[in-house]
Length: 238
Image 1 (cartoon, rainbow, N blue to C red):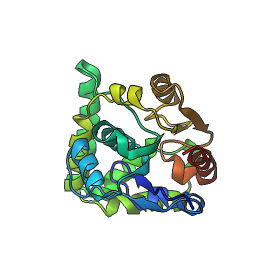
Image 2: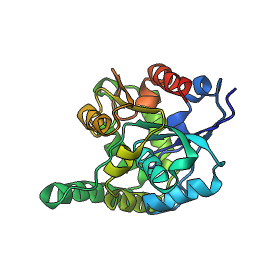
Image 3: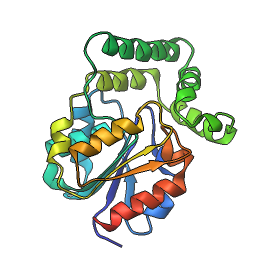
Image 4: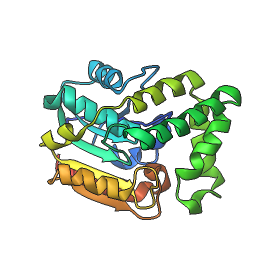
């Protein structure tokens, strides 16, 4: 087993559940651990907390908001990251004008549901656009996602939404990356689209890009075998 550990960073309101389906394959060659953001409310705080608790040098994979946290880790301490995988994520700051206002409106509408009806009710709305349409009838998958969200509070949701709304532009971070890199997304991800990931690869020309057919935004849970295969190829270069 390679000596460098792999830190797995979950996204908005997520925990180890996102990574559990791929950990068995990945842990055959790496020691894997899943990061907990706890109650931080900026991406920079999340990244600093991760670095405080991480070994001196490590590999890093982030999903969704976790990908943005991973890029902040690289911004702060690039010398500590030996390999980077970004899954179903984005890199730009919130858009100006009406587009940005609409993003905030949609996020605040979900927060209102979480605060007034409960986190599970919010998650039932959120998940509709986050998995492949064909998986909306997969009760096992959906229940795993809903239970994962229920383990977090509306307060944590508010803090993480604040972190995302105030996210910095990570273009300079992407342009600075020198280590083996993977950019992966579900081919049917309607939130963090394939086109967005192709744009990310333009900033990191040496990165390998992988599109997972039959998956939406929750690719590691929807298509764990395909995601594991792509990640294992990346790990072999690290």
